[in-house]
Image (cartoon, rainbow, N blue to C red):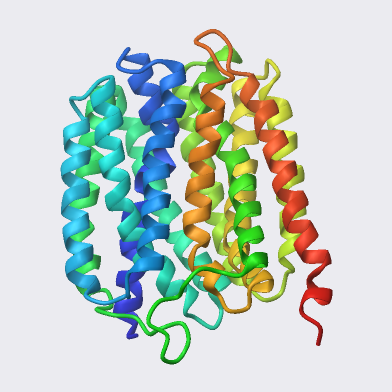
Length: 375
């Protein structure tokens, strides 16, 4: 690929994940405006992220990476339409429209993940992707906090998302038209082997923990006696920290072992969630969420080398993005079962349990790697 094609592939993925970075405030705003309930927050997030992840997985297994430009342009335009329609929706209409948006986002994400899985240093390219994605989300979150949402509420938030999606036509037009097969003569990547599936399951469970807690940021702030402005501030400050975390991961790619990063991120998340369960001042709430954001983005690029260690064929790596998305959908779904309009602290226990279970799965893969793949 040329540099412009690589940038286009990254830009398509950035467009696909814009909404994920601002889920806590846009869904929280819908709840504040009584267009959703607190349990609905988790369920709507589940619908969108689940359809995104399932679509990414199915497309990755069933389609050849050909005719990517027209596919990317069509998916981008449909995503813009779904975002615009959500601006006036409520109740079940939000569920339907966010599910349609998830399908479009899944197709766009497939293009980016397929490109990253074919590089010599996937963790570095993943770091570039995560950093660019988070920087774009940061700009949108700051605009939400300082102007759009105070003036126009949830309606303005989804109109802004529609505009961002429409701008995404440009990278779709300059991105690659096709990608090489993973192995010579191989038309479709195919399903991964057993250890690859275990790596994907570990990713699914681990990411589910952070997804369960993250989507309830605004209700957690309310339970700590803080208002929606604190949650919005916590979101954009966290995105600043995530940009730093993604940049650090890009710089350290190939120099830090992925399992060490998993351990550091887990300890940070558990400490932050313990604080979220307390009555803490606004500055500490914002700082804690920033620490979680920094470690979360630092961890993200190292998920790909974890799957490659488990499955050197890289079939699992191609499905890594889908596993993360489906895990991110499972977390809010389970969270919706342990929250009410009066108390959302159950998500903290749920998040910790899922994260520790996922860490145990990938840890087993790491410590059995040499026996499974002898020199």
